[in-house]
Length: 251
Length: 289
Image 1 (cartoon, rainbow over the protein chains, first blue to last red):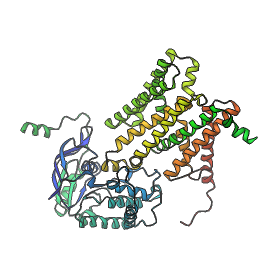
Image 2 (image 1 turned 90 degrees about the horizontal axis):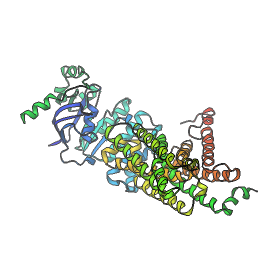
Image 3 (image 1 turned 60 degrees about the vertical axis):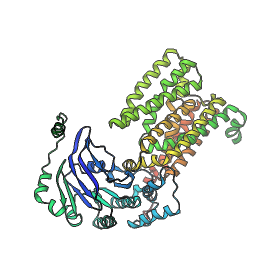
Image 4 (image 1 turned 90 degrees about the vertical axis):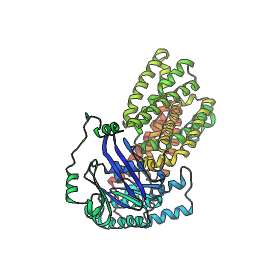
């Protein structure tokens, strides 16, 4: 059963597509890697899935999921780490679905937060300001928040960038655990070896879909070469999309 | 002697008691807003907004003379209009909020000065620019206290989304739609507190009791709650000491308050526990962990 369905979806900024005409389905409980060179549209696709970015065309259907049933791990560069907030409070924001604007953090919620922090190996870091953490520690904090969100669909944007192999292994184990619990996981990644070893499905993206399916069949040198050859397509004077014209004529 | 210098002005003169009450109300509400302005890198936005309220206050003055209610209402309307227009333009076009605000506040300032120059005298202009906390009557004090109460209540409502939006805006957008309304409500609170400060300190210095205490707090704590408390205390101390200074030396009250806050700021820059210059120059022996 599909957890996510892309209906000819085009995502982009100011009418310029970053992901063009994507069709396909992600099965419930799947573990999908989204790969492609820089600028391929991976982050844009993930932002479209979590509802931050509205499609320019087409649609994304979430299989009946409420938007709050999706956990999103952004690239750490998106977070203002100079803000004076502790690890405990930051991870605690993962309980938003339960607490909302005014809900208190009771004893049970505090224990949940402490368990999530312990699960990612950050015991004793609860009161540390996030600005004092290393890159790997911050990534663990972000994973702890995802844990607390207890979501059916988990979307990870380059979750293993610039972190050491021990942290990567620990966090990858969490990702596998989520899949084992029947959650659907999509992750934008750059490490081909990791994708080959741990992710059953792969979408190769290069501003549009290059290939999508079982990793062993999709992750071929030919497909990767096509993706690598992706040219920068931003053009301020570009005409309206011809594919859309053809579709409207057919309709 | 000390009693005469520090306490007597407030026990003997009602206008000093009213001014002190106003300064404390401004500190209680304005300082937390200033902390968020600073942490959201909007310190200069506050300054821009202070200019944006000018045409509304000027229209109030044009219609009713030096009637503080009319000027307050006008300032609120102008400030809200600029804040909301700038916020909406920024959110719907992707233009950075400071750029969007710069356009609106410059237009607003030009309009305000034009309006004041149509009817005002130099004294009126001085009042608009620098305020006069010592001339505050009971009704104005009530308006200031009311605005401070509203600020604290609204801040309590939007506190959580405001914090999350400041640190991780994308996350908030995935779990809630509260980010946009919280941001607009925050801008509204900035305007309310500027209008409040406008009565006491004038348009040029109104933002001072918001931003300077926030800057002071940043040098003493890494914890948001503690920062807010320090900022409130710093603003209240500045208000009290500024009033005493003004009373004893006849320096105008608004600039006296801001000058005291500036002295506290300089002390914090030098000796602050978090990033203070002396602490950096003489950090002591390194720790074990």
